[in-house]
Image (cartoon, rainbow, N blue to C red; front, side):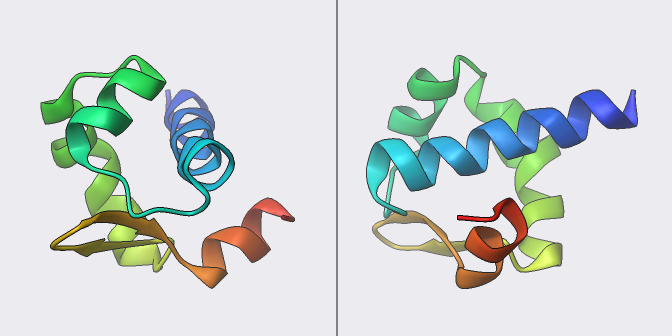
Length: 74
């Protein structure tokens, strides 16, 4: 189960980076882009991404951090 979660967050981060130039991207837009419920993104994936320093939340939306780029090899 943990591997599925790791793969999913990787897909989400790659979407922010590749589809939205690293962000900022709003929750509604991100949810539609990765076909995931907004609540799941906020309650399941974001806490981990924020804790690891891969994601930053701003008033304009979510932004992939430099650490996320490095971790994904981008």
